[in-house]
Image (cartoon, rainbow, N blue to C red; front, side, top):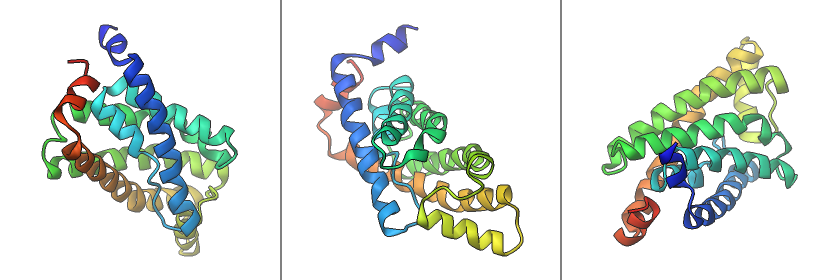
Length: 192
């Protein structure tokens, strides 16, 4: 419980607010241009790494809730739990030092993407019938459906293609951001 309290300072709460805006803005890009990616976890991963798993989880969860409430992506709330797990995993990988080398960050992103795909596919298939309102990923699901797969396996196939790549890109973007941040700011984020 002590780690939980340490993660929530005035500074980290302000960082969470900025991260939520980054998530929603980043998540709108692929939706608008039809990419089969998400790019909606950059802020979540950044907070997870800089502050910790609890703050990362809260950032992911709140991002999806707020994204839904704004009306920009009403379905986002269905994946709020998955977004929280992405933030928690980022925090765990961050605490384990995986963001100190680019290839470890990439592997952490791939692992997180596989977990996200496994957790997200049943939500997409059973809650939304496989159609989530994201043109890029919906097109991939439609292609798998046309090949004869049912809604669940089409969403699993799409997720195992999109999610690991998306989270690897996300983790590498955060790795690059961390390289650019002053050491003083990184230390303050961790409460040092």
